[in-house]
Image 1: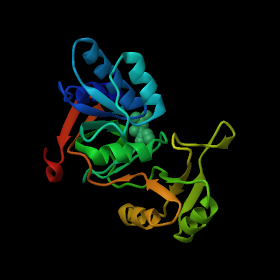
Image 2: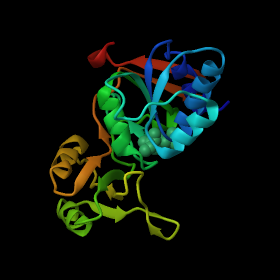
Image 3: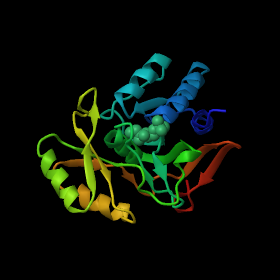
Image 4: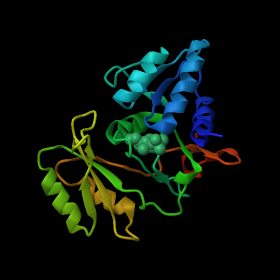
Length: 226
Ligand code: 5RP
């Protein structure tokens, strides 16, 4: 049983006719996009905003009608993966490098569902390297300031070169010291000139769908009821 597919298929059930839907990025979101594509083939009428070029290509292939970020004025429902999520529904995202677009789409959305396999459910955030998207100009300066916080920032690489996001930026993957308050650290980093966005997604979802070895579990966030 593929736990990521279980979660993705479940979340797709919340997509309804007439919605503007934010389509997430990554291997879990991939299953959700496939499920939504199938629903569109069967007559579902939606418009969607993809959170990455990869998801855009997948959605196009499936015939899902797309909007650009400039064309939409709201998003009804955003569905996306996470790298870690704690019991208070705070998440770290950006392992797939799409954190900035994901943050924009989730912020615009009336409702957000995070999807994951059970390995992403953690008691405390911080084991996963924390992604920080920075513009290329001044990146070493941001890196030094993060190191001054007692953390270890590492420039993400891909194909032997600095990894570039869909917006042409760098990513620093940051390992914090144990017991760091990630929400506070994220705020501090976000204030640094050159930082575009961080992978901290605090209290943004109204529910999660987690694929587990005993089936899919949907959990509602009591602080963000729909
Ligand atoms: C991309 C993301 C992904 O949603 C996150 O990395 C989870 O990916 P996966 O479902 O492949 O484990 O934030 O920027």
